[in-house]
Amino acid sequence: MEKLEQLYEGKAKKVFATENPDLVIVSYKDDATAFDGQKKGIISGKGAINNRMTNFLMQKLEKQGVPTHFVEELNDRETVVRKVSIVPLEVIVRNLSAGHFASRYGVEEGIVFEEPVVEFSYKNDDLHDPLLNDDHAVALKLATREEIAVIKQMALKVNELLKGILLECGVTLVDFKLEFGKTSDGKLVLADEISPDTCRFWDAKTGEKLDKDRFRRDLGNVEEAYIEMRRRLLGE
Ligand code: 5GP
Image 1 (cartoon, helix red, strand yellow):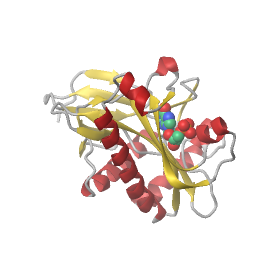
Image 2: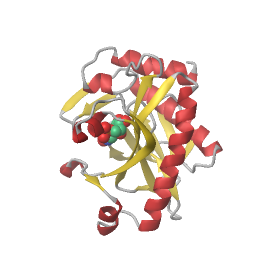
Image 3: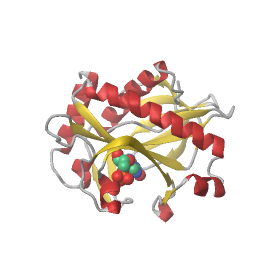
Image 4: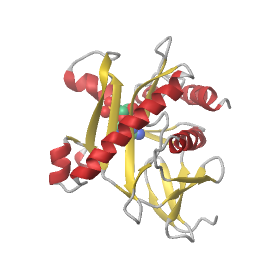
């Protein structure tokens, strides 16, 4: 499939048109940002790892009945996906306290929740992705009530499936962020990526962080964490 003009460049990916109006090509970059883009860097080899890992997990989810935008991996950094309009909600699922949950509510990291916590943020860089609830999202016309219910149900199903896949690799799924998109025929599908950039992965035995928190918090061994996650999940 031929890559045509660039449609969009985000912090971690570029999107290109193809000759098919319903398909685009996503190209993963090594660029890393944190704290609303204030911290910038390069995580060498990250783009290829995130591409492979996202595609591996999206294919597993599809097989279990979760519709995704995945179509075909082209090479180590590029993938054909269905063109969607992104629902401007960051859908966060948490199994343990960490990150903003811990700082916002003044609790330590690592508290295991009895039930997963689903949380929405308004995907808007200028406003710093503010937290919002279902009523806010409906009032702002970001999604309908029915779409929010479907998104929440899909996010919880993704959590159950991912938790199982990761536990088999000795990894605790602490939390993650999903994005959903609508295809030209109005179908809601899982979009964006599932990677150490968008999830918190802790070694199940030692609690060692194997995700982008190593970059965000200057913990060192950043590339090594991504490589370790690729090894555990993909055996590569
Ligand atoms: P927190 O709200 O604690 O910062 O993040 C919760 C989870 O969602 C983490 O796994 C984090 O990686 C992911 N997440 C939240 N917001 C973003 C974002 O804007 N970009 C990325 N890549 N991940 C995010």
